[in-house]
Amino acid sequence: MRILGIETSCDETAAAVVTERGEVLSDVVHTQIDVHAPYGGVVPELASRNHQHFIRPVIERALAQANTSLTSLDGLAVTCQPGLSGALLVGLGVARAMAWAADKPLVGVDHLVGHLLAAFLRFPEQLAQEYPEFPFIALLVSGGHTALYRVDGPELNQIRELGATRDDAAGEAYDKVAKLLGLGYPGGPVVDRLAQEGDPLVIELSRPMPGRDSLEFSFSGLKTNVMRYVELQGLPGNDSRLRDLCAAFQSRVVDSLVQKTLRAAKREGLSTIVVGGGVAANRGLRSALDAAAAARGLRTIFPPLRACTDNAAMIAYAGAQRLRLGHDDRQNLTMSPHSALLTVTKKGPGPRGAAQRRAQ
Ligand code: KG4
Ligand code: ZN
Image 1 (cartoon, rainbow, N blue to C red):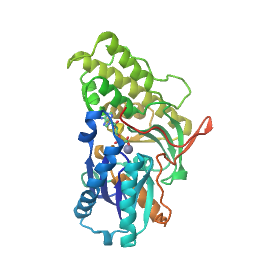
Image 2: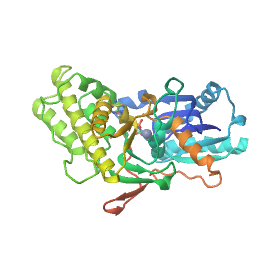
Image 3: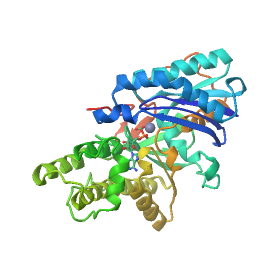
Image 4: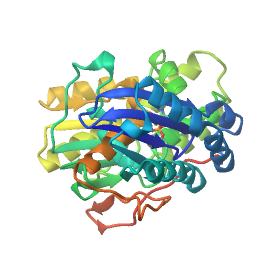
């Protein structure tokens, strides 16, 4: 099977052609970072307009790079939730029109499921990478969401949320701290780079939710802590104090993510940990989680770096798993700003979806 995936939920216009086994035949991502950077976050109206402008050339490029055409595809998959409503509608409209015109099946994909399955993708240069097996614990760490899941299979009803952030997502905390320090948007990659050169022990920052039992996260207190440090000590220049502050912030975020992920694995009795989302590209997280998991005999699987941040290959792969089972959503495909993943924590079923990443 060859599936075209389309992704327009936030600030990346993306299209990709992927097989049902996860081989990536093409993967085109047009990022709008430059458009949103002056605002320190994503401006929804600008995002929709940019998707409108770039969606057609991006799809044409993805089909051409995969040496295929709409008529030879086996189906289409499009992100239908969660995300910015106007942005999602652009992808949905295009996908629906293409599916009807070529009489191909079309499935809607939850963006978060895409991130959780990104570790199954096989890029030409990385065919030898380890393949996850169900069930596994998944740590989703992106700009809009941070949560732990038990994943028994690729379908929505096989994925159960074990705990999520009570406030900011991890990527959102990186972006806000970077904005505060004048490091630009998105903040994750630059804070990660500076943290590698700093000493995490020089500056004392609070530990996010050290509670012994919880699988929930909280990053807004840590962000406030950085803000207070800057108020008291002044904004660091491009010097060792900036690097130490980034290192201290990163070590607090990473410690919290690692601790809760290991706890979830222990609680569910599972030995495989899969990570997804933009913050899965973080070097500090990759090395700390690998080391802590290995010490307990657990296996960690991170997606290839280019599949951590938003892309359409993960949407095509997640969609392929639904198309394989004969689903076709052409008649009743709807968009939602919220995820449909079921939230089942110790407190019982909770509200669906979480905060969106926006400029503020
Ligand atoms: O998954 P993603 O592309 O978009 C959402 O679905 O939200 O994640 C983007 C987020 C941004 O907040 C960005 O700062 C963060 O991922 N990010 C990182 C790194 N690379 C991207 N955070 C920490 N370290 C990185 N290396
Ligand atoms: Zn994402």
